[in-house]
Image (tube, rainbow, N blue to C red; front, side, top):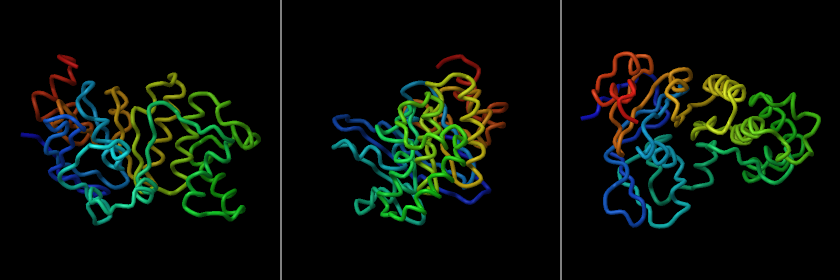
Length: 261
């Protein structure tokens, strides 16, 4: 049995009896997961490598659909609908539920065009609107001062930490409801990591955030809620401070105290 807290906040997403199976695999990789994602809060997912954290994260905006044969069961409720239905508009969904990957992936184009990319996909053509929204996104991602004089420069000329903030600017430019972070600082130095963590905390004022991290200290620093996963199961979800200090499940306690992982 899992221990899952009933959150007092409004839910941005709710998962009900969710299973996911990779193509060619007989047993589900994620098993009967139910959990709430609190609105305008940060929820962290922790657990040992291979436990299903990233698999679950990528289910929230149907990234697994990019590869044939993967199957979903159950419900992921967002804006009053089950996003696992076949009729779901993937471009619209990924606009509203954006994703930041482990390795910064600046597109091979200018800094400006990187941030404007998603807005142009949405049909925004007005140059003044694009300019204003690119500037706002870069400001919100705390990288405007470093880029305002080089917007026409190749984005790949930025450092790793700058590229990750650029990717965040690109994601938030289309004004998502939810932002998914997949180990966003694992490739960064400590100073860049500190900057990204500060930014993530600031962003929850405007959107709901789900972050996968292999770093328990990071989860403790940035998140309001933490979920512990093991072998495709969600073992425990609770308030971060309570989960780390007084976990309800023995398996959670053993992981947090370093007995395995």
